[in-house]
Figure 1 (tube, one colour):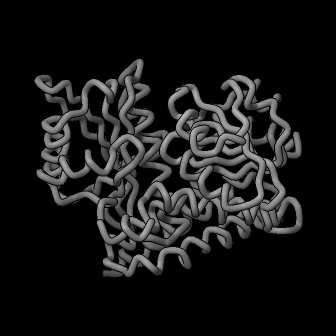
Figure 2 (cartoon, rainbow, N blue to C red; figure 1 turned 135 degrees about the vertical axis):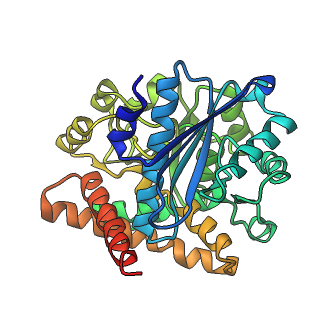
Length: 355
């Protein structure tokens, strides 16, 4: 693995490796850039098959967090933290406190965001050693504005924009959804869908996650993971892993809209083009899942939690405008989204040169 070649792929500024053998803590921290502000770093714990794959994941997370922030015009750069190992075995108080000590060594360059791999309880342990964290403000959580809930609600707004573009009406009542992956975000998204008259099909490789939903909503349809792509639905939503859907999977899709909570639902530009050829409207996850960053930005700036819902509705306008602009330019939506975000970062960088 040539680390500088990996960094060149996303033009990332910095990658830091931390290791504490006594706790089996192996951390890779990527910083894409900090032009817009301190790097907001989401975290993933996974038993990666190689250091190269773990590093690529950290770089990709940082890269997409930069552009999510730029699309929303928030004051965060992009960061990504990967912790290598089986989270059910490696996480404990000392492990998490040590992560906090490592974060301190970066002296405020990054802010650790609460995410699917790092629970509220985990963050409290990290907090014992560092102040550079976001996503555990009790005022926001009690108001129903945890980062995970904010992501799910922002996804609804983005999907409404896609539905408006595809079907002519923003209402999702009467539409059918296939949801791939019902972990924290997927579960919260399904809860949001239940507020509407929708038909829902779900799948997950972990049966316990499905059972939690089934116990609460018995009439939800459950299928095996390899059957989810064949479901005849209006909207397919992936809340699994980045780059999870292959060419074979795209060819099986029987939907009109494809999106998700993850940054890159499709592995390559070629797959995005294939989706378009099959008359599927593809919206990259980083476009519609900005609710987390909005919530964390408000927490960082000490804004009133009640302001969040109005801000989440802006995801509708961002998504709808990107769809229209892609049609005008005859380009993929992900290309237009990245170009828009890059232009904003460049503009901010230019005015900062004036100081």
